[in-house]
Length: 118
Image 1 (tube, rainbow, N blue to C red):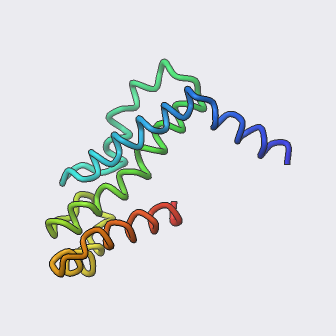
Image 2 (cartoon, rainbow, N blue to C red):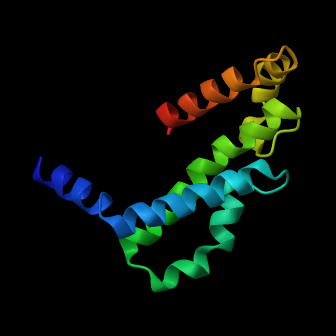
């Protein structure tokens, strides 16, 4: 239990929250771009993490990877073109919902599913 509390204490530091938010924003943007995936982006941004602490670097790369999986569903739902390979199945139900005018519902379900799955 002490280890869990120590991990949470590290994650709620303002610098760590900033690193995670930055990685999440980058991941969502890159995930929405067709042709780039979370693993590709993490590999391309790996040199940036050299100056970071090990915990911050893992949090940064992990947040990029997880957010890119959600970002790919944005284009899959709105334009029927998955931005990430993992979002190809989202086109089956997400785009028809968007065509019915329920794009917000589809994006919300995708965000909740990505958060629970992650």
